Length: 200
Image 1 (cartoon, rainbow, N blue to C red):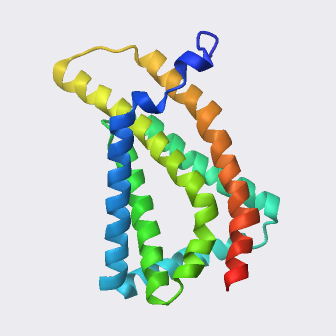
Image 2 (image 1 turned 180 degrees about the vertical axis):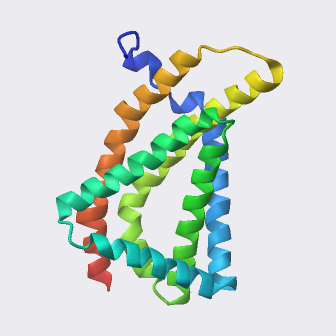
């Protein structure tokens, strides 16, 4: 499938998608801010949402550290893959991925802040967040790039080598995104959780 690709040439680099990376970062940052403000203005809504999520997550408490790492890795991998491939749908899907994740993070942060648990939030998210968030921005930026080409195809009837573009996206996902997401998952389970317990 990838015989005609070269990792030096065909991995999608940050400089190729820098405007889209910036756009993804702005959407994500504004979504975090919105989630944070919602938590302060409508705390009951966020608390109810957190309770529902916690109830779902409790069903995975039987998982050991390795199983939990794989579960988190698979979940994050699916989300980033959807952000990349979904970019061909005029860029709508990566935007939604950014907004939803930003609202969740901002809402939880606001809830923790209201409860006087700011340090606990930082301890539980910082170590893996500095790895995971940039790679989510990167994957979403690739999706936005694909969305840009899709819009140009729709409006200006410009043609692109869609097969090669898709292959470059999947190639980049496999060689760049997946390994970094796996590292982030390991850090989340084996380091972030320990830091959270340390400050509690």
